[in-house]
Structure formats: structure tokens, C-alpha cells
Length: 161
Image 1: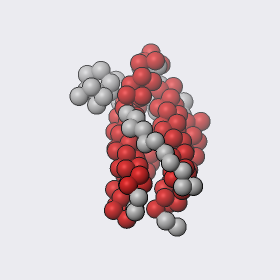
Image 2: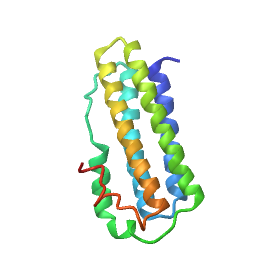
Image 3: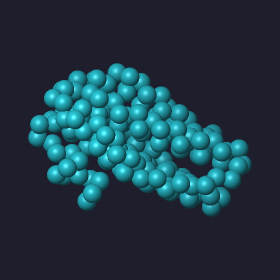
């Protein structure tokens, strides 16, 4: 299996995991964040699939952090509900952080092995987005773990600073 085929499998697995985690998550904000990341992963999957088919693609540099900030602003009241996350929900976010870390490492490691510039640029962009996804999941984890003391998006925001 080549790097692009492996990346397709990774993105497919991420979509499945994040979708299932969203279905099980009771916290409105946590669910919205997971579903937003699913859309990012679906976009990644489409670009990888198109490259594998030999199609020309337009590599879009999208900022997942900006998208999540929009989701947070739209769901702010629900996010601030004092719903405590279950251990299973927190574990799902820990797993998500690890998946994004491994995804970044995979993309960075394989850039030099690719032959086409478009493929290299795509892997660079995907590595960058995996870093942002990791930050999002980390912030969400800490927010859900102790929302009373964590000012995720307003006072200690990773989005604005």
C-alpha cells in the first residue's frame, strides 16, 4: 500500500471514529466539534481519492480553528451548559488527539517519499490541519473535563492568539 492509499485508510477510519463518537457524545458542543472535524476529514478523503485517481486537485488551505470558532460562537450557550462529560467521552477526545498526532507524523514523514509536487503540497497541508485538529481536540478535552475553570475560547483562546 502506498502513502496515498494509507492516507485514504487513515482518513476513512477517522471519519468513522469521529462520527461514532459524536453519536455517543451528550455534550452539545463536543458533538458539534466532532461533526465539524468529520467534515474536514471528508474533504481530506476527497482530495486524496482524487489524487489517487490521477485527477488535478485544488489544494485548499482551510483553517479548522476558524471553523471551530464559528461553531463555538453558534453553540456558546449550549457549550457552557454544566453537562459533565463521561469518562467515555473524555477518552474519545484523548483517542482523537492521538489519531491526529499520528496523522501529522505520517504526513510529515511521507512528504519526501512522494514524487509529484501536488502530492507533496497536499501532504504538507494535511499535516498542518492535523496539528490544528489536535489543538481543537485538546482544548475540547480540557474544557469538557473542567468547564468551570477552563475559558477555552474567550480568555485563553488558541484561535485568537
